[in-house]
Image 1 (cartoon, one colour):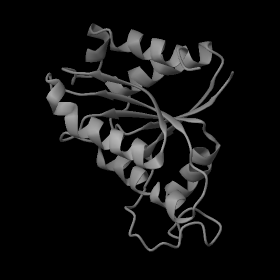
Image 2 (image 1 turned 90 degrees about the vertical axis):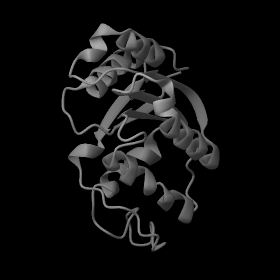
Image 3 (image 1 turned 120 degrees about the horizontal axis):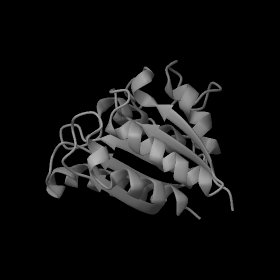
Image 4 (image 1 turned 60 degrees about the vertical axis):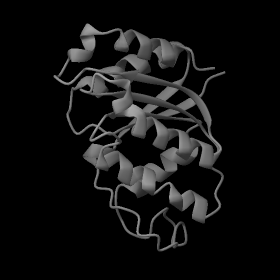
Length: 181
């Protein structure tokens, strides 16, 4: 069964390790018959949520005009949301976090928002504990939204562009994409 997959990327570094993993994941997912769209939060201006609770009341997800209003329809349409992110100070980069914060709009507006999700994270820290806050944030968020977690792929010890090529992270990302059912 083909699924609509939306990959949210958080890396402001074009062509870096996160982008390489997204490419590998996409190859696998498309090979399995899924449709994959990408949305780079780092290339959009998404302001932080101010909890005004006016979500979806004026025809858009957020009453303030920013990149989230472009993202919201893609979120509604997607069946699977993939968070592809580098590790920034032990969690998501601000660009991706701002988009995640605005998921609140779906809760406020009581819009259906049942999804499946995946986490693809990589970073310089060579210790798994360095990723603990990011993973915990992902777990609590998906639990709160009652999403189905389809898996996580953490690659430690990569920083320089292309360093992920020296690991099995690209193959694992491709296999993760191919394994979505």
